[in-house]
Picture 1 (tube, rainbow, N blue to C red):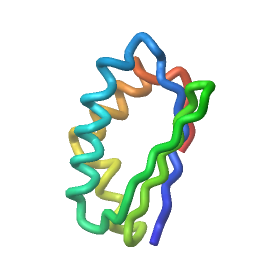
Picture 2: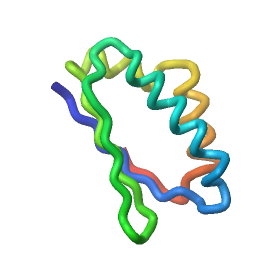
Picture 3: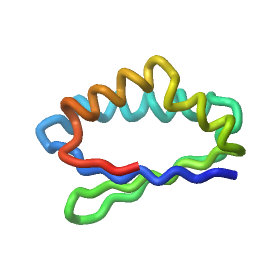
Length: 86
């Protein structure tokens, strides 16, 4: 099993626009071969932490290369996130 930890801070003015995209990304991840689970945590300061599990590094590799996920990553960098780490 491989675990990915994604920490982020969403720009509040984009929260409504971001939610449907986040739901779609989870739908896609759940449909990927090797997906095990995803959990999200938020603290009072607005920081978010997502923990995503896949069966193997090889199966995980397809997720960041999915065309819709590539576009979501671009939007995250350019628009949605104040900060993020992977």
